[in-house]
Image (cartoon, rainbow, N blue to C red; front, side):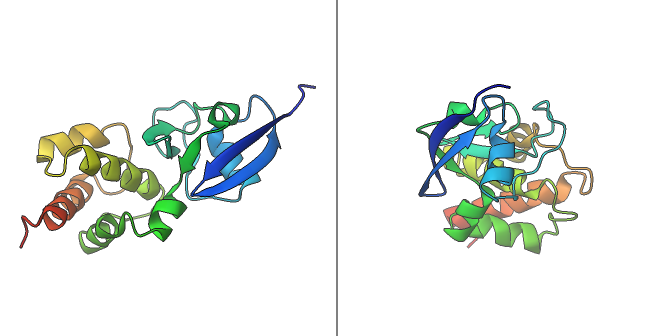
Length: 161
């Protein structure tokens, strides 16, 4: 049996210290040990993007990142950015544009879209599509999602006024 290791991670602004197995993924740590189930486990190969979280300011695949790699780091999940109001404009746009559908991909889409709008507050539709291309959605065909991100960007920059 592999010995567990103690890690301390700041999750959504709160310091958490837990013992984990060295091979446990970050998304499994968040879901199983912390109880934050907004990030989903999809392909477990880093392809679908459902496990996307923010690690030290960058979006990462939670299934490809080990929990021990987050020791001493800051992690933000969909619960944290939603509760803080950081993504309120995006959430409203997703609702208004019917970009939610089943909701499985939505947390990762929102985190990824928020990262895009932080980098580029006024992206073009092709830029939105490119940035979101690592996040799979099987319900909406992406049109509603791109519409929602475009609408949120416009609202946030005042271009829609």
